[in-house]
Length: 314
Image (cartoon, rainbow, N blue to C red; front, side, top):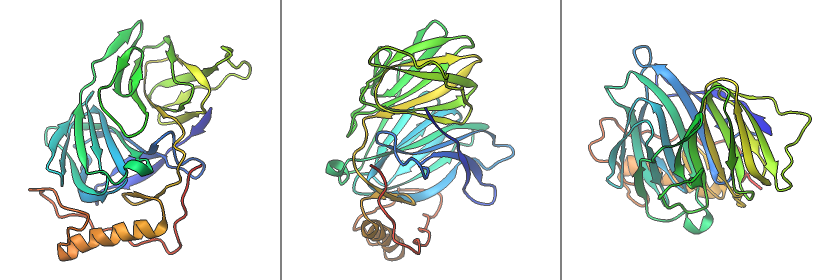
């Protein structure tokens, strides 16, 4: 299993919250269609500002908001206004273009969760923007609990429709629990450990667990990558642990991801940036609108790189 360690990235202004970014990285841009993973908290909001992200644009992707503690208020330019809470998912499909804002609510004292992005396949990346709020029913067994927000796992199936096959689930394991999780052998898999540590082994089609050497446990905040081929994922927790299990078949397309845009070429992303700035400076609605009644002014895009952006992926 390839282990990806996070880098700290400030998000916001002078009292910015810090997020741990494990995807993308130089050695890996995608796990299935998952192209971005920020993990944050638990943050005491008596000492930090929390999440304050004014209106900003997206193209060619879908965002997944998942919380462990706290609440986040969402507004977008397609007219959706919602609050995401622990154990609930907000899925916003940007498609051809959307803008949105995210703010931790005044009642939130501790903020802890993950922000994930999905690259949309080329055939669907210009769809109209949409939004879905979904509350998965937990499923439980001896020493474990799971909430499946995308795809199917452990007898639970999400009703959320996506533009490519996907898996997204939160799993909580009690100390001493070993859980055998049947998975799709065609999927790439990512295991993000939120708390505790978890030993992960993939059992391939021949049914043999690779021994030795034994994979060392994934530690809190690490992301483990499992190549396709495993039909069962064995998760062993020596201490209480919580993790996100993400997956999907190899995406098969090369993407350019810069700021909040996912495109297919440097020139395309440059055009998206120009259209966003034109919306802010001239009110040009060619691609982007703004959320109604947002309390803060929208963000301007940062300067473009000084070199051409190169598509990354397979």
